[in-house]
Structures are given as C-alpha cells and as structure tokens.
Image 1 (cartoon, rainbow over the protein chains, first blue to last red):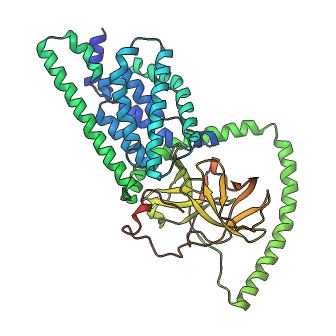
Image 2: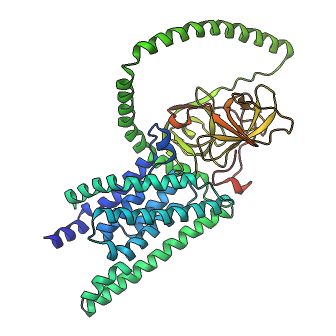
Image 3: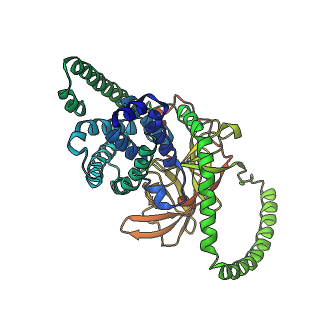
Length: 168
Length: 300
C-alpha cells in the first residue's frame, strides 16, 4: 500500500504540497502578530517545515526548492541575501546524511535532532550575519529564536503530520 | 548523498548506477546553490549587495497575500481585546472621561499657542517646521527575524513614497523607509542594530546619538562629557544629518548604568498598526552608485 501512495504523491499535484506549505509558512513568518515576543522571536517556520518534509518525503523537497525558499525568505525578511539559502541547503544536507540514524524513532528523537540541527544552523547564521555587519552581533536574540523555533517544532510537526497523512 | 546509500546497497547494478548518478547530481546541485549563496553573501559583505529595487519588488509579490492573511488575524485580535476588555469597561470609561476633560483644557491652550506661534513666526520670518504626511500606511509584515528590525508597510511608489523618508506613529518616531517597491516599502526600525538617530535631550538640549541594539530598547551614545541625563528624560530628534526632521519624539531614558544609558522608544514598535510616512526630503535623492556600503539596509 505504501509504495503506490508514495509514487502517486510524487507525480501528482499533491507532490507540490511540501513546497507550497513552506511558502505559506514563510508568509506566516512575516505577519505582524501584534506581540513583542512574536516580533522579536518568531519561530523559523520554514526551517521546521523543510526538516519535517525532508525527514518524511525527501524527494519532494529538492535542493532547488530549498534554494528558492531561502531566496524568497531573504528578500521578504530583508536580511542579507544568502543567509536563509545557506541555512535551508544545510538543512537538506544534514537530514539526508543523518536520516538513517533517526528514521523510525519516536517523535521525541526527531524533536531533539531538530533542536541540535537548528542550534548549529543558527550559530552559522549568526557568524554570517556578524561577518556581514563587520562586528559580532548580540547572541541573546539568536539564542531566543533558537529556543522558540525548537519549542515550536513539536506543534508544527504535528500539524504537518496530519496534513501529510491526509494528502500524501 | 548519505541518505541514499542504504537503498543504494539493496538494489541491483543498474539501479545502483542510477542512484549513484542521482546522488552525484544532488551533490552537484548542493555545491552549485551553495556557491550562488556564498557569492550573494560576498556581495553583501564587500558592499555591492542586491539592489534595493529588487527587494522592494519582491515585497510587492508578498503584499497581496499578507494583506489577505492579516484580515483574520486582525479580526481575532480585535475579538480577543473586546472579550478581555469587557470586565474593565466601567473603569476605563471613568478614566476616559477624566482624560477627556483634561485634554479639552490642553486643546484650548494648544490652539492659543499655535496662533501665537504663527504670529511670532510671521513677525520673525521663520519658515514653517510642520512636516506634512505623505502617506498613511498599514503595517502588513515584520521582517528580520533575530538579526534585523524592520516592518513592511502597504505604501510604495504608488503613493510617492521614496527611500529615506521618516516614519512615525501617533507617539513618536518609528524609523525610515529603506526599500521601496510599487505597493510596499520596508521601514528600518529605530531599534535595528544599523540604526543611528541624531537626537537631542529635550530638557538640557544636549545632542547625542540613539543607537539600535536589535532589542526592545536602545542606547544613548556620544553625549557630551558634561551632559546631565536623568531617568525619565525625553529624547527628540535633533535634525542633524538631514534624515529626520527636528523635534520628533523618539524615546525616554529608562535606565542609567555606568556609561550605558538605556532608552525605551515612545512609539509602539511591538504592536504597530497604522503609521505615517512624512514628506521630509531636505537631502537630494539617493544615487544608486554612491555609497554602496549602505545598500543592504544601511544605517540611519
């Protein structure tokens, strides 16, 4: 049963869902939610989405899609071009190399793996941004965003999981 | 790629070759896109950056969807505020009545002062200092994540908005426009790390610089050595540098610790809704070729 469903989902328009959902989440990241915490520490929803889809349907989130998502995120967020591209390309590289170690484990393991990966990616992003700014940027806001992103992985992954079972 | 190798081992020779080719293509794609990303970053680091116009038009693409998504969020927030406010409505009504009475007295005083001010200006032939609003816009997006502080407003060149115009809300300065598209403009907030606003202490007249820190508060720097500052002092724009008009309220001094003077912005940066772009252009329009170091967002 699983093989035909996988084949159908890759070929049909439903196969575009992971990228479409990620674009929607990118737009959601831009919305002014009217709270100080939301404004200063929005979870990186696109990173969560990419990690989730790469863990469950890696073929539906190719490098090109990661590149385009990163590009639009950089343009929309107003950050230097390349920051989110690098983060999302590295997300795919990480998942494809490490999936064999955590595939099939319980959700808690996925959550921990995501948290570890996100920590590394935010660290890289902080280094890149510091290089662009020409001085070391404060780490507390980046640390807060990592915490918020890691925390939000579980609820977002739950919703994406419902969506995956429903459509793909 | 590594993830493909488990399946790679279970297939036959032809399947193995196909998967190897696919993996190689994947690795090639990774490096190709990574090189593109690094080139873009190098351009940002070494000053060329991406033209602001491209960023502005990319924001135009997102604007209609953001405006659509914002509707239910606004409705939900209004509903929550209504529900939360029902219990306090009696007390709030009392407070508003008192405030209304006080404001009426202030209004009469202000009208007298405006007339007097105008007469004196005419006598002394001093030019008008009121800055007309160019556009009233709604905040449709926030940007920057952990690294930058900016918002997206739904006014662009369609309403004659240009780069480097000051933006205010009803309480004070918010920032200035940096990337302008046809339908949208990005406003660099005064709390952004790249923001430097020339300011003046309202009480003493000392000039200084209000510096953004990517936090909810700012820092006051370059105050004169003999400058006296107290918690509660109000800080307004000095007008130096030509980007901001003078006397626009910016922040309050909320903390002094050694040489760190903390400022809290007067404007509601954490919950912006409607803002006003001011038609203040004392400087000639920015040339794309000059000072490329500021293309990526720039400093105030």
